[in-house]
Length: 138
Image (cartoon, rainbow, N blue to C red; front, side, top):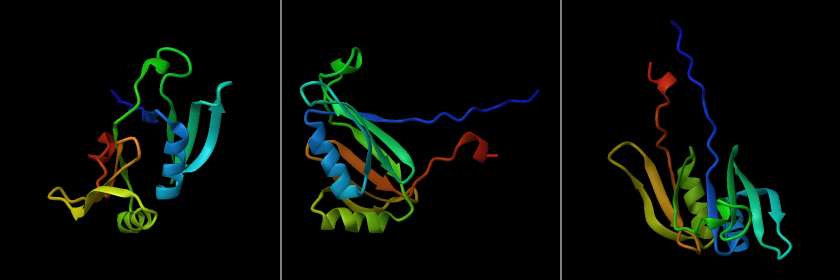
């Protein structure tokens, strides 16, 4: 009997009180790039997509759009992203003026990481730790 494992792609979504501020922060501090920006008649971000090194983050303005999504409150959330060049990303974010919530450090589980706090209190953690996928464990 053969077992197949289907790999899912997960796209996190963050709700902001002011999505424009969140988008600008992600672009300036971390180098995210805007791919899509859908707005309602009042100019609120209903759905935005930002790319970051081959991954996609979705975000929007809390309280707008269709249900049940419009009932989700704005942050704070924790988003972790694995990167190879964590030191360079840290230095870029600090030079851009990001608030560092957890300084660059080596962890006891083998990661090198740091955490930033965005203007609405979301925590953005970046590190070298990558969980092993089931098919990689064999």
